[in-house]
Length: 109
Image 1 (cartoon, rainbow, N blue to C red):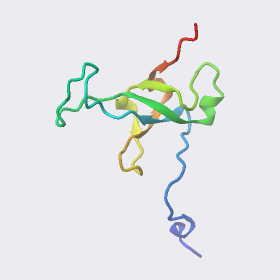
Image 2 (tube, rainbow, N blue to C red; image 1 turned 45 degrees about the horizontal axis):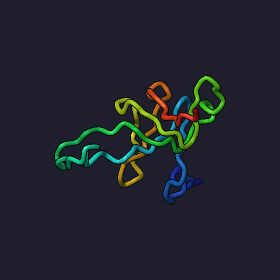
Image 3 (tube, one colour; image 1 turned 90 degrees about the vertical axis):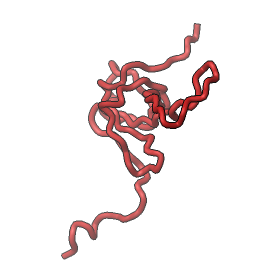
Image 4 (cartoon, rainbow, N blue to C red; image 1 turned 180 degrees about the horizontal axis):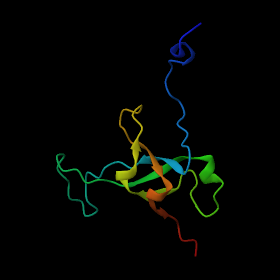
């Protein structure tokens, strides 16, 4: 009889699927320059809390009161975000719906 480890594939993780009331967000790059063109020093970190939704859990997809879909640009609270470590730049985060504070939409008027 094999061990539990024998049943686990040792290849790279290809898909991260959020579970429950969560989404997977790819955080935008940290700002290196202000909108006015002022270059920021590398040792000063200004947290960027915007990103794009990469995946939405099945539960969130079935919640009409939560208008979040894949590719939405969102503003989120990074303190409640769980980093996904398999990516070298560490820009993927699992975020609970409660920590999404805004969705950016284009005005079609």
